[in-house]
Amino acid sequence: GIVPLSMNQRRLYYLEKMNDSSTEYVMTTVLNVKGLFDIEKFQRCLDTIVENHRILQSCIEEHNGIPHLVFHKGINCAIKKLKTSHVL
Image (cartoon, rainbow, N blue to C red; front, side, top):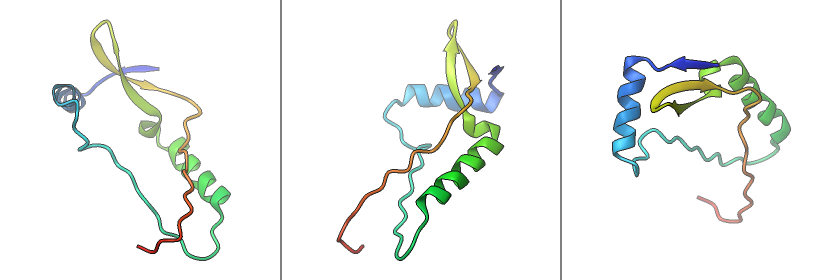
């Protein structure tokens, strides 16, 4: 569905539009895992978190020039697996 943005969401949306190169709200995480790790189970856990928190299934889209919060079904977190021999 489509939901109007709150006043705070609109403010952040327009501030972000004015500063296209901003990465202030981009969150990335790197995990350095040693030993056995069940990546499929971890993927299911992340998918469950997204499924149970509706805001994580949303994005902001403009309709007729007005930003709205749009919710999507079937969103999941893609896990990128990297192999490295370097120790950080």
